[in-house]
Image (cartoon, rainbow, N blue to C red):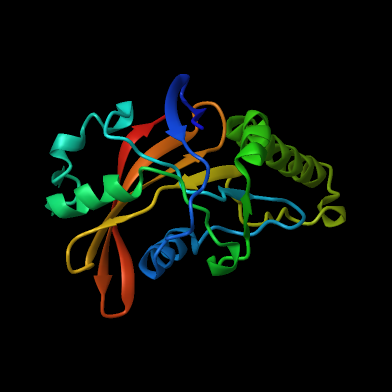
Length: 228
């Protein structure tokens, strides 16, 4: 039975079809790539900072975000002065493996700072996310603390209030989704997609290109198909 979900990207609702999860055929290579992508997501005490949807999302050739698909085989990156070539066989494999959703095994995700959750939990949390308000609150809190310190200095009471020290600023709470990856024939190059959403005007849909090195998989590039 088909089910429709909307990704709200800067006010644009993009519909994607998903099905009930099939048997888990996600490969070892794909799990290695997932872990490379998510390895640096940070921890925040007593909070679910990064939520990852526990199933991959399907991708159809007809999806609006893939209207650029005919040019996927060659991405020019003028900022880096290079061309990324994606073999047609990898693109064909990408669409083939993404006809349905597949469950992601939590025990195979190495970063314990992230939480795999159901689609229902993602839908519950998404309306509460507002990265703009989060960063505004951080700024206001810091301005207040600095103001109190400056005022204490002016009154000669600086010794009563130590100079402000701020912890490293963590990113706003974010929900993530990922597709399966398609490979070339010798499985040395992979192409997939991922999304993130952290509130109004804080979302993206990216094409991910990975290559296999002697030390394992490496993310070569992430190309924004949509950003808000």
